[in-house]
Amino acid sequence: MELIETTLASIPGTTFALCAVAVLIAGFMRGFVGFGAAMILIMTLSLILGPRAAVAISSLSGVVLVIQLLPETIRTSEKPFVVPFGIATFVAAPFGTLVLVSLDPAIMKMAISVFVLFMVLMMWRGWRIGGGRVAIIGTGLAAGFAQGTAGVGGPPAVALALARPGTTVQQRANVLGTVAALAFCGVPPLWYHGMFTAEVVIFSALVLPLYVSGTWLGQRFFSQQGQHIYRAAALWVLAITGGATLVIAVSDYLY
Image 1 (cartoon, rainbow, N blue to C red):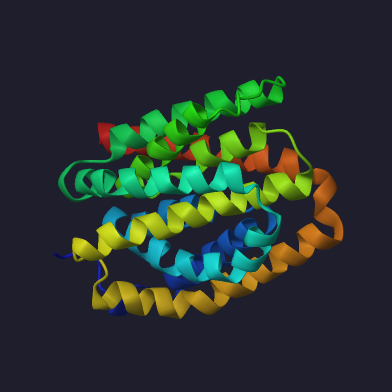
Image 2: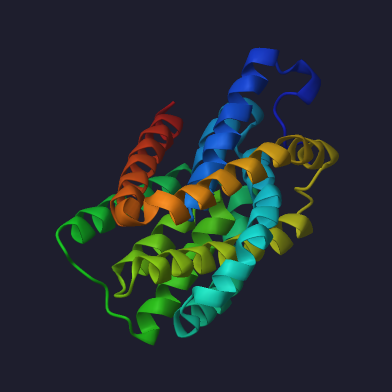
């Protein structure tokens, strides 16, 4: 399967530099708010390498970041929320990957973006999702399917996590837990469909140091001065990435 629409050797230096900046920003967002990295990477890399390669690179490099943040996640997350959510994502992700390898994901991206923007609006107005098991599992299934389809399962998961009561530290830990589940659930079906090609692995290895460095900087910012602006920053990231993804998805679908 030919995933990368242009070879790595043919990418201009300035273009690769822009990719590097995007990776650094994505890592900072992952370390600070706990999510948003995949959407930044996929939106940037898909313009250069194609959407399938972008999803594969984001998933492969994202696993390392999840491991980097895993001790903090295990220590402070809400296990009755994260565990059933994670199991649901593993059930749904393979079905989403079937869509990725066979159909245009633009329609799914549009639907996800509209849902995310709706959730952001509701949360700005103070609305909260019920914490019942059905809501957790249902959102986990939807997020896992979206992760397999377009690598953008994070926003529905984060919207649910932020809508739950709790301290800023616990909300961020729940976000990290849902993002970890999405990162792991997307890898087996991508591997099964042969999407981790040599060029995908090489590109992931090249950008990984920047990704890890950005994540470390984001963690430090949260621990030192970012806690009091965390929720507002997370909602703004959701709104901006959701709106940008919607515009790109509509453009891809129409043109």
